[in-house]
Image (cartoon, rainbow, N blue to C red; front, side, top):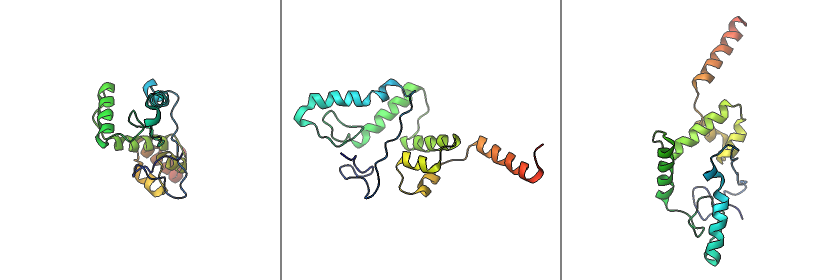
Length: 147
């Protein structure tokens, strides 16, 4: 079953858009990796009351969580990790920038984020100091040759 439209729960993904399944890094902390097992157990307990909408974050009956619930969970995770308070959306920008810094192709990053247009993905990237330093060194090399 296709997952719901990312901005309009209950609706299918945009026409012609393949549903992207972002990769979960192997070193992801156990609670995040165990999400499907937890959900499988909840599905079994709910029985006929389970609403299978293909959601990653769902209530114990498979329906979408309340709008404010994901924010509460996010804030709790940040606090437990000892990380400063930032929006979930900021994490998307950080992940995008980190992927670009690792030389992941912009089209791959686009798919991971589920963007229809690469220009949207480009707006999510931020130029970091190491990338700026590298650009300066390349420009110097092009102008004056290698030292």
